[in-house]
Image (tube, rainbow, N blue to C red; front, top):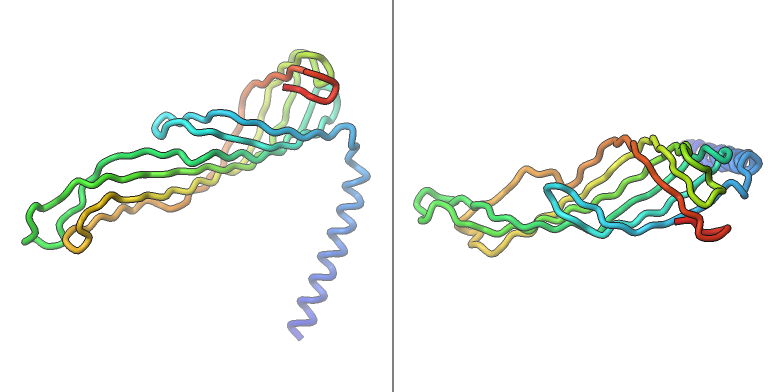
Length: 184
């Protein structure tokens, strides 16, 4: 009985998905859709800098307004610091040893933004736009510890291995048309 229910639900889901795809295809005009990618340098005040990249889809509602869906990521940011591992026993001398810790953090985020052109528009050679958006950020933290005698000393941190959170995007952007099909 449970297997029949699962197959029925799967069939309904596939049928619904097909109907939504057909309706969406009729609502979206292909000439208003564009895709882009970028490479940059992301700097974090406490972590340092790393190469970042993004991909995005732009849907222009009209000449002055656009909805942008994007994915951003970056190569892991690496930092090093020293910390102390404590003796596992009160008879161990010295009571602590210094170890080197290498920390790597990688970030990923997905977002949806609204762009409103303040100067020019998407079809002119130059356009300046304001943006507002929301998204989710995911970060993964990994640490590697230097050499120390793990039978005599303990080292542990209560850092989470991954983090996530909501974000708000506010900013200004600019477009420079290079040709009819390419903008910077």
